[in-house]
Image (cartoon, rainbow, N blue to C red; front, side):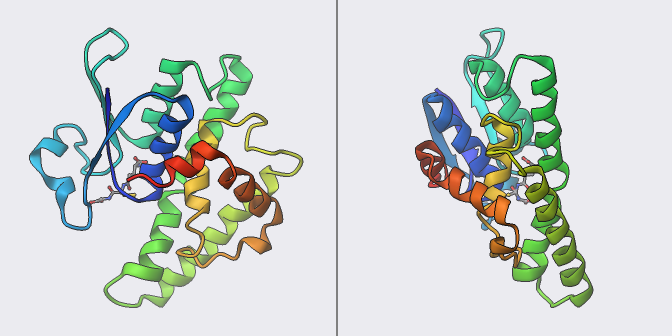
Length: 204
Ligand SMILES: N[C@@H](CCC(=O)N[C@@H](CS)C(=O)NCC(=O)O)C(=O)O
């Protein structure tokens, strides 16, 4: 059975949503990143950058066990393993990968900085708060524009949506008012009504 090393954060939930979506059996191993569990040796052997999520699949592509870290790589792996949520057709596949990489390089790291400076920094840093508030607004605008005439970021529901939605769901940490981004707000509602998304968002 797949082992999912995770915690209750948007990056962790990308993978639990995918595992729920493809109905692969999995066991959750909570890694409490608030108490430093991500630095334990057993975990660093799986995730050398000391971050969740990570997975161990006893049945990798060649039948031998495989471990993966970085949520984007895990999503692609699970999509390839199951043939689900990442199209085979080249043009559609690259389009999904565009938006997955956009999330991995932008709509995650920069929103994460907004979370940090808005909520968790040990001192108030007005320049950083302002900078990441602006970047967050711009990224939400990019998503909102993309969703013009679309239900999901690439026509059919895909791993790109599983990566993007959990970060939308944390909009309060980003001090983002979704009603300013009506297409993104409608998208959030669409995603939150999907049962496997609801289940994935409860993990751990
Ligand atoms: N690029 C990584 C980012 C993962 C990440 O930032 N994980 C955070 C929680 S959301 C973490 O484990 N932080 C613990 C730490 O940095 O010590 C991914 O997408 O998997």
